Image (cartoon, rainbow, N blue to C red):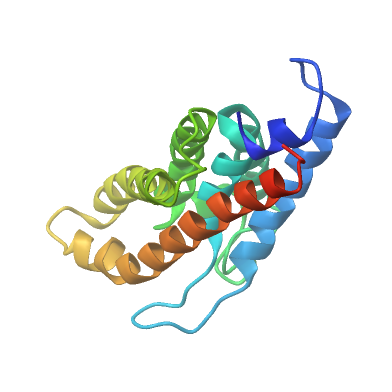
Length: 192
């Protein structure tokens, strides 16, 4: 059971509340894309944290729906991605160097959601591993697309992986702290 499922008593079908949560989650992902924190060697956004957080909070189905809506918004030209509209919009942006990472959000949120349903969001070690799994999974299509786009003779790992490891480890650790603490807080107050 996920945090969202624990806090809502609803039938096993998609409800208006679910739709509202999916839309709000896609907007949260947009906000995370637009806030950039100076970090070495690349600026840090909170997108990875939000993606794994959506999986941990909403589970695989609603998490994928929220990320899918976010990607659809970007694909039709809404300036929801980091660096848009300056770096292009729509399908042209998705075809660029970060497109594979954006597509990687889907399996990442699914995997973290799948693990959350199995209780991995309640223990700091398991929450860290679930968030780390999501972060690693999103790199697979990202690096594959970057290599295809830029050429495999280029230093793909140096461009598309190594600079992001410190920031993603920090965001993974943050998720590992936030989600178990939220469960504890809700349990102590008898809310779940």
